[in-house]
Length: 177
Image 1 (cartoon, rainbow, N blue to C red):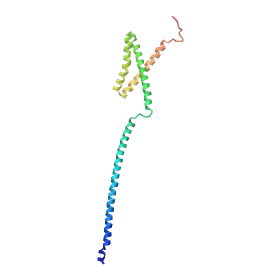
Image 2: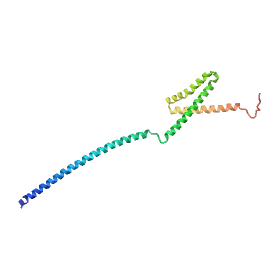
Image 3: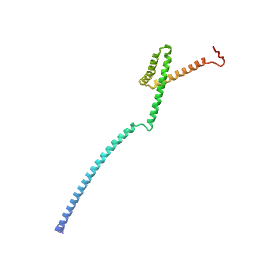
Image 4: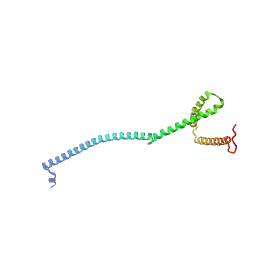
């Protein structure tokens, strides 16, 4: 009986070989199809990787532009602020010119005093700015601001007393000469 199980008929052998060959061809077909899908996916993955790299570069570029960009409405505010600073600069320059003229008036320099005063009015702000840039210490700025306030309050009080001294009083009659 044992030998009967071992003996195969030619049809069985042919069927086994056909199944083995069909399984081998199916395995080869599956292997080739897997390889084709992998190659197709590889090219798609490479294309998507390149697209991802391009989008990351674009994102970094946009991020850099956003960091450098001014806030919304800042350009208008900056123009307004610049105009204000120029107006203040012009007013202080003109004031410096006229105060310099008043200071030089006793010396009777004539037309030369106008040149000197224009030079003082233009150079003094530049020198003050350079001084403040060179010695940019917060303690120095506070001390200078305090000194300026003290000097201005002293000048203001002395001007008020000076005006009060020379203004006509209501008790004294006005005598025309």
